[in-house]
Image (cartoon, rainbow, N blue to C red; front, side, top):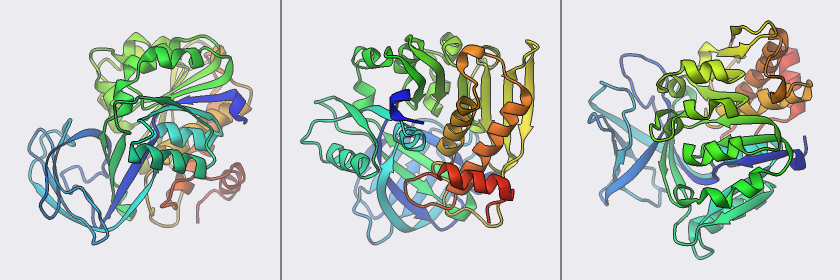
Length: 370
């Protein structure tokens, strides 16, 4: 697929990655953590990093020797697991700075043109993000927000234990004027992706004319936004892809679930739940198992983007588009299996990047990532 056919609206961040030596939480559920949450530094200094959620849950991280900071306490915007309290001690074994953000991920995986925000040229983080976008060959049309710094994320990952906690520190994307993006959204395109932008921006971008297929990849804040709830613009979405914790956080899920032609909810090793409009006009559900792997993951970061981008690209390449609204179960199941294979392949990467079409096809033919 070519960039002229695919337009992506979403953030490009600087990911500051900390790889820890054990599961992030060893709570009653026993399930891996896969969450994104806004953070605010309450104070800096000290010898380590403490992440504190509203319930008083504390995740204390001892950084590696090459960590350049910051250090101190971070207040998280919402609870990681409601009702879970206590202090969890982690030791980071390695750190890495790399490109992040769902907008950058979907643009790279789909070969699309990215529209996202950067701060002023004097902002060091903005310059680093621009360099990384060029390094990875992503066509970028930036919106400059001169009085704000670029966004960045503290990304805590437990590798083979399957945890990912992205703590976002918001800068320029929180200050984007919707009018600066909507002229680009109205241009004709095959696919329009809106990934990880707040609902006040996602709503007009998805509602703009000109796209044959409109895809939404929400973050947790999209699901919990009560000022601009997702239900208000669900009819402007053709495909929604998110993880289980994001979907269950959405109040009144029935309205988006009924209005969006295809909803894909990933649940790690438990597979994917698909809800869709059948050709008979009925709402139908389908479960697709997680793609088989012979070894533990190296990193779960970008699995959601690999899944969503491959699901979208496979459906469009098969001749489906959002104007059809309904779909045959066999076509959707085949696309979801390819998407699951792409997600399984990206688990072996510890850097920014996605499997090629040929790698996905080979994995589907083999039936396992080995």
